Image 1 (tube, rainbow, N blue to C red):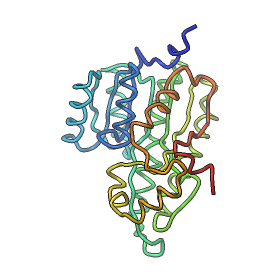
Image 2 (image 1 turned 90 degrees about the horizontal axis):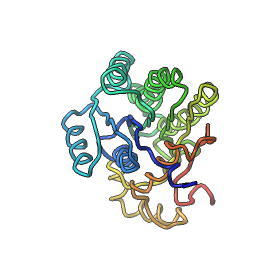
Image 3 (image 1 turned 120 degrees about the horizontal axis):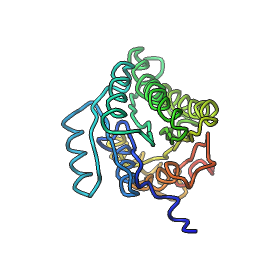
Image 4 (image 1 turned 90 degrees about the vertical axis):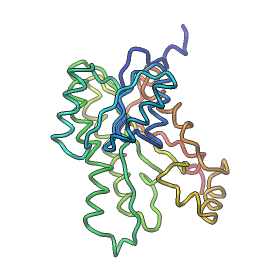
Length: 256
């Protein structure tokens, strides 16, 4: 038996939300490298087109789908188009997310709602729409992007932490409801990674020194380092892994 064949995604089709840059783009590239056809998503059509071109230049079979993951109508229309015109979605990565920093006592209510909609409601809406087809086929892999903040919190990001705790338990709930239909639903919880979202933190020498000291591996993560976890959870290698949150954090959560 060739164990490496368990990790092959050849013949599979993956939708990755929020994938024009950062973690989503890195995961899309990793899944493509394992053989999957990729559908990337975002709301900025220009950025989405540039991302698709980069992936295609590296040999990926890629399509772009610009739609609003927080709108039920937009999601329904887009998923219907993909399933009917491109083909069944075998793998879904719910990666779309946002951050807004402010002291909790001054946190604007509209920003709280936006954070929750982007980070949690989107996974519910897209997950539900895609799962219907997967349930009918009795097969499918869903990966929700969680965070260190699924477990912890930090000053000025309480709503973000709340949203990431919610997405972790939504992952467990999806697995509980859909495992009997042949679906595997798991989460990846990145530690501190070098992304555009974290640009201000990376540029802050004091914060970067804290990250390097707090993380046993002594550095920020690089987004391609999430690729192996994504391929594992998207492949048959994880056939009995369900409802699990996989921390990719340089051992940060392993130590106090």
